[in-house]
Length: 238
Image 1: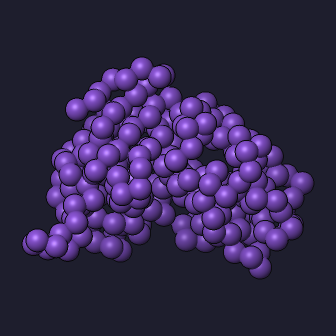
Image 2: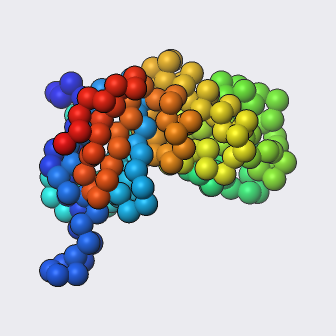
């Protein structure tokens, strides 16, 4: 069993073939220990989105290996990857991706329906969803629909939804991108508290102020890791 929750070796991703191939990732090595909070940064075209899609089991690498929580997911079928996503990964998106007709508690219950245990009824699922909304500070907004919530509150619902299955990994893709400065800072403080409680978080962000809440920053450039920084001190700069 690897000591790492995420263990990536020689990861490459190319789109197209031959002379027209676009190499989004070029031999990335990256390890993340359980309990770390890692921010991934880089300019447009650096490979951030491609790396996030592979980390989230939404795509497969062209070559190299990706071991997640002791399981090599590099060559799994699409159906098998979907199973890994449901069991082990929680997603937080820039645009929240909430279902507009459902209340906050119903939105948080959605992932539970994909991992339904025959011994766990809807009442228990509702209790789990309520507990998670209370954890993110929305215990008084259970019945509100997304259009009745502020952007920051919608993102809190999305975080509760991402956590309700107790995933091994929380992936946050530009979680403050649609928020004003104050709401964005509140969301980052929430993610930091979740990290302090033991959550493993990998976040893609373009915002330097958001990255400062992470305890490690990985900078991508042209499909390779240009720097790996911890606590403001540069550790690696190939």
